[in-house]
Image (tube, rainbow, N blue to C red; front, side):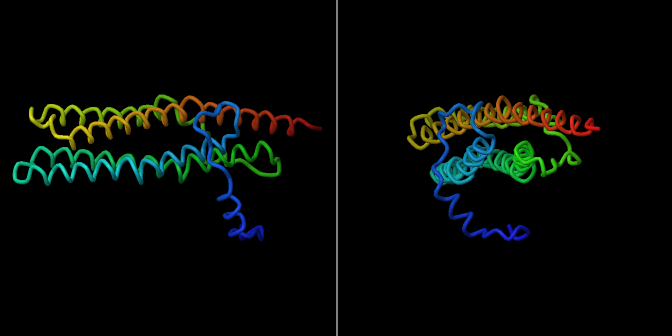
Length: 208
């Protein structure tokens, strides 16, 4: 904005007035920047609601068991490891992957822009590799759930344990839906745009 003498505050205010993206919309038809905005919103939900709530409930459960909280401490340690890995994964997407796709889409509509091909193609992120990260996180959540269920027989009767299990299941469901949007819609569509840009560049070079 500074380089182009654009009022950043005005742009920010305008963006804030836009309605939120609808989860039920057809993501194969809307611009990719709508989908990326929705996925970034998912990230905010994971950071500010899902993960903090689970952390808070696990700490409360630890206090409930007092001196016998060793198994709970192990579960908390594992969940903290998951949280750190997942936070890094989200940050990588927001710092590199999402901006790259946004610029690629913008280049399609604004020929005067150049795509950052020197930083690699979106296609360099195989669908299986991207999905594998999300599936690994989902597996960790499943393991934590099983440990909570089988730790102590009477533990199942505690309302707070049921709340934790529900929170873990909700996080897992949200994670799977998020992964689907990324790997089955966002990445394939971004790769198709790159192909269009390549064809356009080849056609321009062929002009006598």
